[in-house]
Length: 349
Image 1 (cartoon, rainbow, N blue to C red):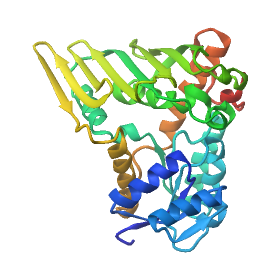
Image 2 (image 1 turned 90 degrees about the horizontal axis):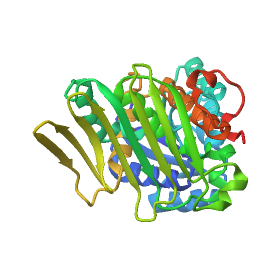
Image 3 (image 1 turned 60 degrees about the horizontal axis):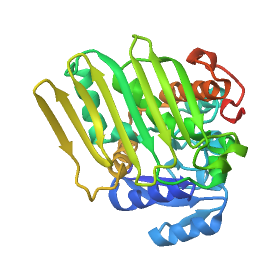
């Protein structure tokens, strides 16, 4: 195995462009060798900017190109399964943006395709690679806050993405596209499973979302297997800045990430509050995306499994789909109601 992974990028939109720039300047284990996008002009502009040698307008040409070791999938979520299947069939290891797919059935199909082909499939839950979140998880796991009984998290975007992206049939809508990060954190940080959700949503600042069947603001209440409770707040309309904050409250203290609107983690126990400040010139989560890509490359180079695979995407997606159903049906929904469902919950109205 070479010292660097030859990586192909599928998707040259907002996230694909972010990944490409970080790979080019901060991931020494990776060499970006190809970019594919249905908008081939956009792909070509990005490739020329970063001196990437190959450009394609069809992902199938990229995954089949000689010399490509692995693929990073940053296309629209509705296309993830198609790209994963083709990349797996070509024998390429895969790092895919969250979620793997928009339904449980398609998520299972994506994982099965990778397993049949014997390739790695890592899902892009990049906050698991964020230094502050990793410290918070270590503190909870070490018992520093005692038994967790409350999970609190919020994710605020400063502006609305393009309407075409907001369509639940394309991205899963706010509860899947945005909420899935929080639902993954709820499981990962507490070490427990979410069993029931009750979600509320509103179209208050962006009425143009209503015809799509989605909202720009949502609140989701969570109930965990062990009895802990939780809440997740989401909005695409926080004009002041992107804002992400998370807290796990336990019997002995609290572990939290985020000081409005800065990146920071902290531990609060009786008589002491310790703050882990991050330099203000560090872009929010850029370091986490770099760490995620490096871990993916190291798994290939060291011939070992990835740390965050399809099972994690399935579990978090199930919570998001349950929340979507709860919001539209106006009732609490058990997560087991949507696991194994074949219908596209995220596109239901």
